[in-house]
Image: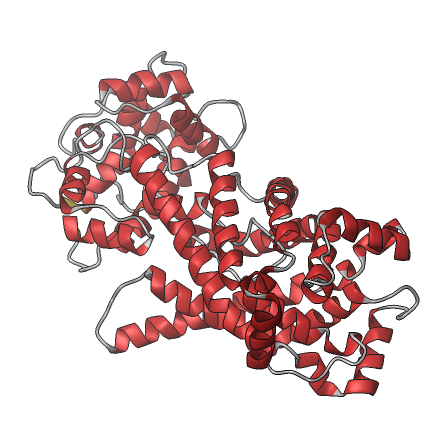
Amino acid sequence: MVSSVLCRCVASPPPDAAAATSSSASSPASVDPCGGAVCGGPDHRLRLWSLFQTLDVNRDGGLCVNDLAVGLGRLGLHRTEGELQKIVQAGDKDLDGQLDFEEFVHYLQDHEKKLRLVFKSLDKKNDGRIDAQEIMQSLRDLGVKISEQQAEKILKRIRTGHFWGPVTYMDKNGTMTIDWNEWRDYHLLHPVENIPEIILYWKHSTIFDVGENLTVPDEFTVEERQTGMWWRHLVAGGGAGAVSRTCTAPLDRLKVLMQVHASRSNNMCIVGGFTQMIREGGAKSLWRGNGINVLKIAPESAIKFMAYEQSVCSLFQIKRLVGSDQETLRIHERLVAGSLAGAIAQSSIYPMEVLKTRMALRKTGQYSGMLDCARKILAREGMAAFYKGYVPNMLGIIPYAGIDLAVYETLKNAWLQRYAVNSADPGVFVLLACGTMSSTCGQLASYPLALVRTRMQAQASIEGAPEVTMSSLFRQILRTEGAFGLYRGLAPNFMKVIPAVSISYVVYENLKITLGVQSR
């Protein structure tokens, strides 16, 4: 293993290593840059040179992918070509396709800092060792459930690439625990930090936008927070949402029309609804209400993220007060924090939701724009009109966010258990399928509340419509239309899910590149 090379504290360095060290002794680079962090001995740089020489198979002074494959194989460490490419890309500062000695040293230093963060996050007891229970707890916090036997197997032979793949032993002394040295020796020349990798690859609410921003916010890794990548993810997600909503706006407007106007006596179908909209206002009318729907993305996402972060901090403070030192949130705790953040964000921008509904329902010439619409509503109905439907909207957050999160985490867990061999990266199609299914289930559960909300928001736009409460409107719909009446407009709503998820994903990935976000 790597330790056999790194920790030869009493062994004499090879002549060429000694020469290389003495020749650079006068420069700052010859001083141990990390205080012997890898091994702890005084000859840290000589040991790194010894490891470098072992890996430099063709003796050209640089480590390419082929050198690493052969050299690590001789040390009993087998990595895939993709993993070796990650190592070279991470350390190759001069972009020559290989690592020279200085680049190799800096890569190990940076990588060990990340490994320490991961080790600390797994070491729940803070005793410097990881046992099976801590492995189970850490994965359970991320929604991945494993048995104690599986956890022991992970300890015994955490596999190449990820927790579930074939085979180098990490627990070298057979104690069924892993100390820092064992963890470091195994992972030092491995490009993946396993726990954060799951968070990194399985982002959900940031990427997918189906027009309803009620999902629980995504987690961000420690590295993403420290490097400031989190805000770039949010900006990319906001841009993707804007494009996605604009592309699916005709279906969204049709859904609103069917929610408000469709009934047994007015059985509006999809083709008939589009025909009616185009006949009344032309093709441009298909996008009525889209402007305000796009504008509310930025304030809603920003407020929701800040509220979620504050909720998470409060939960951690409460957990510390009751004696818990857990550093990650369980699924139900994420749901509580996410629902609270969603309620705060929705309360802040709810008048924009009412404006969006009124603009989508307006007739040609009724309003000259968003500001004119807001002025007329305020003058005729007062400030209270901007909060009509507020109660069913708040009640809809819990079933939507809860079921969306539960379904997504269940699908993620099933995929990781069965298919995560060399990486936690699910690929485009698995991610899209999981996002589509979880969003669809969440919308299906909360749709009756969304329909009642929309009808209450639209009350003043329907001439002669009486003032109704949420409960009386539910009773009226069930009495006159039956349970089916609570799902008016569901067809166009579901029709937009797949294109909305697909478009937002593609735009998100392209915006990430533009904003300089590191590839997942």
